[in-house]
Length: 372
Image (cartoon, rainbow, N blue to C red; front, side):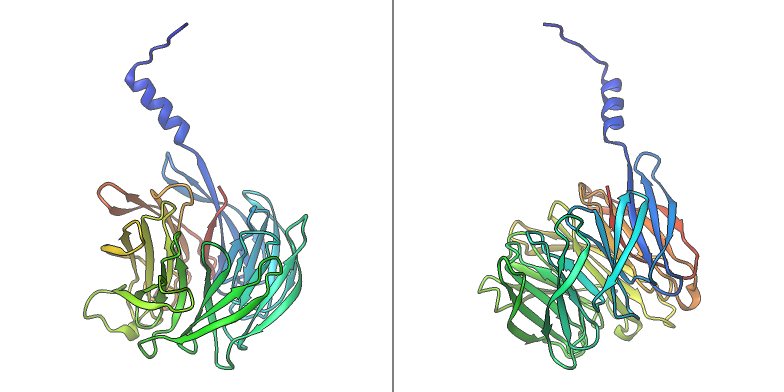
């Protein structure tokens, strides 16, 4: 048997070469210009660059992939449509069509892969079938009611995909719906008022064991954790953490996003300065134990845009190391949209900004989805 021996430095170089790669993502414009952007991240050179731009149906405040990343679904703040784009490759999209009315959407992770849409106005949501072969949105199979004053801005599945929570930002409430297996249809299970008046629940996530629901409150600028262990229909308050510095005026900020790291060991959250506030935003990370209980608020780092529009956090899906952020400048930062990369050190549990690419077309950037 032939045994090969390599010097340690060569082994290190080979390992580095194997792990280094170009990664790609898409982002949309939050306002104004109807454009989608393809962005490339080099994790060896630690650089970002725009590789392509596409005309879109409108300014998309939220974009999301289907389960196979063959289609991009795109939503609006100002139009009553959900758009479909076919993903040709990491930097090419093809327009397909429009359907429905929504500001946020998510797809079921299991067959028949229906798409659920949620409206910021109108008091209802929709369930859409997709074409089995192409993944393109096909037709509406259910319109389900909330309340006349409801405005849903975010939603999340439980790990078994049999239940959906949704955040009613307008009516300061949380809803729960049962998901009918095989049909995708929703049946309301409960509606619950949020404890603090004027909290405005915006986005939410459920941890991988289904024990906790994490809800980002836009106007009280908190991350609130609910315990689900007494039943998914009965969320009970568990923990709350501020997303802006102690003593800050809540009316000068509005919080933006909550999401998990791919390992499930951390949860990320962000806050923005309100338009005209003259304030920057913040990005926070929280350490979780195995059950999902938050054991430590690791840091609250300032971001760079004054009067930010988005401050959307998007961790890479294969490592805790890279965390992308998109932002849209308003007021004193008008036109200063960008995609930024942060590097997280899981040993020291620290965060460093390492790369940035400006996209100053007056409308970028909303949220980010990682392609590879």
